[in-house]
Image 1 (tube, one colour):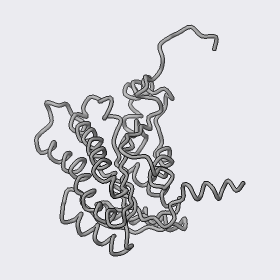
Image 2 (cartoon, one colour):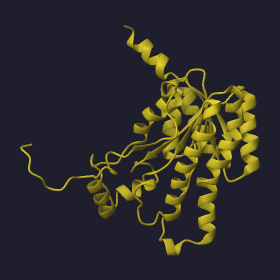
Image 3 (spheres, helix red, strand yellow):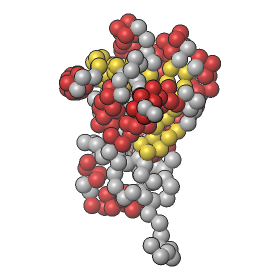
Image 4 (cartoon, one colour):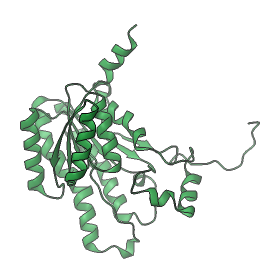
Length: 269
């Protein structure tokens, strides 16, 4: 039995083009590298020109295939131009990963309407706009996979994350709508909701004595996750191995939502 060959046939992304928003972010860049290592050609989309250039160079340096594209997910014209550019460059778009997102931690009563609008515009409306721009390519080829990035806050909300949690919960609903309406085109849509992942933006939380202790107490594995630990599921959902998986939300949270650390109980171990 040729195990390597069988695994390659099942999970390889060779020949697939992935359009990835929020590519230059802490989680995004690791997912992009992981998809490229699985054989995909990754169209890196973000507003950070320097971040894209560094990521593209890193992927190409490993022998992977990547191209950089400036896309502002809050700008409909920017999305249309970027998606058309990618479609023309590659001829097809097989996978869409909606990873672009922002947050501002503050109390519900402290949120200004401009902040509310900005977070909604990028996190939720951005997924709506980009998915609708990419869908026609997938419809024409009668095949595609959409992977939306949710959050732990879709199931258990942290204080100061009200608007962010609302957008991520909305993404789960959009994911289900995509899976229902676009199934006839053989387009699958799923959501990955990471738990407490260690990135440059969350380092301040994990270095905070009280917040870090609070999180560890609630995570069964008692540690933050790493962006690399999301790659495997993303590759699965992008690959043909997940051909009958659609409309679902998948959590990568170290056992946080399941209950975290147990209370004292009788055991011999």
